[in-house]
Length: 173
Image (cartoon, rainbow, N blue to C red; front, side):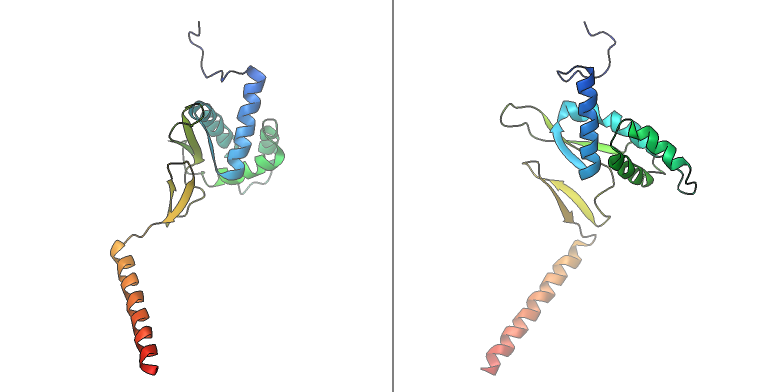
């Protein structure tokens, strides 16, 4: 019986499970978001949050804390990923937790496993863009207009300019 046991086994023993979390974190740091099963995403989220919290302990003004934090992170991650994680953590200095989000997707067709995208909150998209997840799981950045009428006006102006150009060409002939 699994009474009072936390976490998911993911059909793996302890060392394989830890290796899976590490490699998924490396991919998440490298790409910013990854598509995986919902159970793996839910298991990866607290691990990622802990690592970012550790990486936040680097003081940008004090260069002596960087090697210490990198040494601690290097136990869990490759050095390139640890350095990149420290850079990501700099963007979250004022944020207290909640560095990642999980977006649920439609089930996988082959085995109907619940799928999800796990991504960093606030990274990879500017204020003028929002990320849109298509039904097939592909993520696409779409620019959003604060004033929808402004975009309509600009298209109307462009159409008028094209009509004027066409009229001038027809008069020249």
